[in-house]
Every structure is written in structure tokens, then in C-alpha cells.
Image (cartoon, rainbow, N blue to C red; front, side):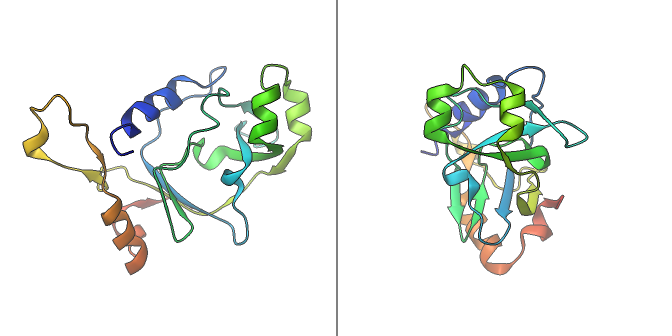
Length: 166
């Protein structure tokens, strides 16, 4: 799993529709209490004024999962950062109809424009799995240190090592 994460990130970044994509740093988020939209709902990109949808993922990206989920914190899950909203449309429904959906239809399906209770960026690469001895090996990919992620969550230290944006 850890070996394919960089490839999945590239697919996600390159699969947005319209002019919606900016490469975000690795991120961690926690949904508002009682909500777990990513499990079965489609995420979309809100416009800057947060009033309408300005982008949505390619149907192949919608099936990607978080690199890790620990105590309701999602590590590097596919989304659009703080401008992410969720539709009432399930992933299964989206996979069947993605090529026929129009912006006006999706706007009517919005169920959550502000889904996150907490949101952090790993701007300095603190959670990267650094392996100096691996640099010259063509079969090794750098990956995410999930053990370090778990320790930060357990100790309540996400904000100490990551940039909290919400």
C-alpha cells in the first residue's frame, strides 16, 4: 500500500476537471462529529465564494481511499482541501452517472459545504518516511510514516508538528 501512494497522488492531482487543481501538501483532517462523508459520498470543489461547485474529481479518483485512518483522522485522503464539499450522491451512483452530471444538478445535491472539524497540512514533510539508505534503490518509493502519524494523534500533537488551517 505504501509503495503506491506517490503514484495515486499523481493520478489524483492530474485527474481533476476544469482548472481546479493545485498540488496540496499532504494533509490530515477530521470530519465534524458524527460525519464520515468520505466513506460513501462524492467530494467536489467549491468556488472561492463557496456558493457553487467549480470542479469535481475524475470518476477513477473517487474510488481512492485515505493512506490511513486512525481515530477518525484521515491521512492524505483525496479531497480539495478546505474548499471541499460533499454531495448526497454515493460513490456507486457517481460511478454510474459521472459522465452525464452537470454543475446545476450537482449544486442541488450538496449536503455539506463545511465538513471538517480539523484540518492540517504537512508542509514541512514531517510525516514523510525518510530513508537515506533507500535513495539509490530503484524499487523503493518514499512513503508516509503512519506510525509517526498515530503517535501525533495519540499524544494530541498534530498542531505541534503540522500546520493547522482549521
